[in-house]
Length: 314
Image (tube, rainbow, N blue to C red; front, top):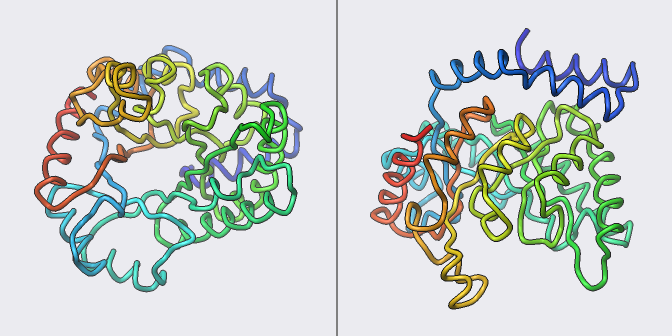
């Protein structure tokens, strides 16, 4: 049985039997047993992570096809787009074919301006429709995952309100995920929401669907804790991985956002430990996608080499 058939079968079984969060946890516990983890580690070790980067990082005045060809030549295997796409899908697919690049995942571009957690149902509806479009587009592009920010807490939206609205909105998206077979991957960002690994785990377990999981950003979490702890807790719920670096010393001495002003391998990520955790949970997402300041071809080559070093710890 292939992955698509398994997901479809799991969704049907869950719907037919009314799987509860508790029974889902039992299923997950079985899948995360030591013997299962050992076999998964063997599988993952034989298939190293592929490298990807965001399209916006390519700061060269080139056509889309030539941008794809450039990063392919620099050692990247994939590019991550924002969707709904700014380019006609036919143009993107043509550039993909000519360059040999892969398009494994996309980032929905409306989840900040129109959050799934918003008190206004019309705002939530706008985001739901946008994510549904992203799910259809990533399928057409040959990928499998849409990154979605689950919600935003601020002075106008309480934590509890965001939790309830966000979960309900994601549940409304499940039929679109099932229709396309694509994954909805929730990313940990600085949104004042889901800021502990136990809560992040609980959030997706309560939704309880095999097509809803996490797009884990390794750098974002350093403000709150240690990524290797999150990875071990979220475990097989992690569908894709973003990487960036962060310096707590810069955050404390120069300001919160200055923490990101550090190159890969020069911040507080303990990459051997982080990648060991990724390996030990049997991660099967297949990709490591850079989300750092971009630049010209020389700068992108440097990032590619830094990613090679990080992947060497896997």
